[in-house]
Amino acid sequence: MKRFFTIFFLAIITVIAFYVSGIISVSPSPYNGVAKYMVDYTIQKTHALNSVTAIVFDFRGYDTLGESFVLCTAVTGVAVILRKAVKGGRKDETK
Amino acid sequence: MKQNKKEKKEKKAKNIIIKCGCDFLLPITLVLGMYIILHGHLSPGGGFQGGVVVSAAVVLVFLAYGNDGIRKTFAPDKMKVTENIGSLMYTFFGLLGILMGANFCRNAIFNIGNPGDLYSSGTIFWMNFSVGLKVMMGIGFMLIVMLRVLDVKNE
Image 1 (cartoon, each protein chain N blue to C red):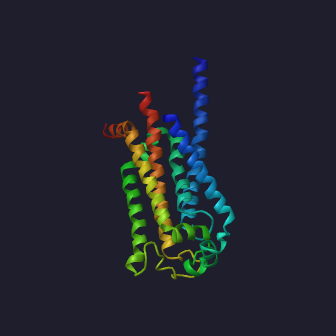
Image 2: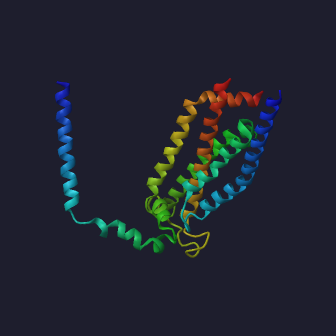
Image 3: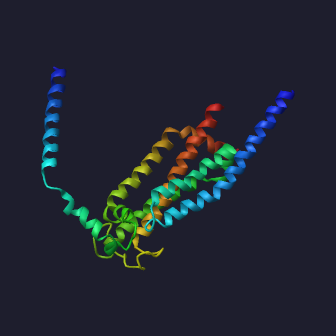
């Protein structure tokens, strides 16, 4: 029974994936959308010559905010998993 | 006895070569990393890349002087605090758009200076700086903690 459900849902997901990729390949190119706007108005809107930095820190600033908090989480995880090492360092300092 | 002395001499010579190389490379690495962070809006690079280049200083000090050198040189507690200050700075410059009467993360002060100057492009410059501060402190703290594991396991 478990095996039947696994195969059933995998089949449904495969059909949906093929359907969506077919729709994407048929629909018209999104080049005239927000990508063209970013390339055309970079210097006018942000006064930055490096357009990659302008996109990362201005047009997509919210994305970079989350990206930098991911690093905060990674540092917290390392400090928790290796807390023996952190404590060992402190012990040597107090000695 | 003779062999022991010879081995010690060879070890010392190797150490001297590594120490001289690291002492030569350390200031160049720091200056190059700060250059990449501060010129993020003019040349290739940015906060993330420059921060990682600066945090390579931890590895250079470890290679030359070992864990004792790291303990004398860096202060991990202050590094943790500085990382949080960096993320608060980024959030503040995101909120500056709301304070100036637009949406979140809007570049409200973009027309300071001409395009091509070092201090231009408003909040992009400051966001680059705060992300660079955050990344260099975060990666440096992670490297220090991971390199200390080598000492703990040997005891």
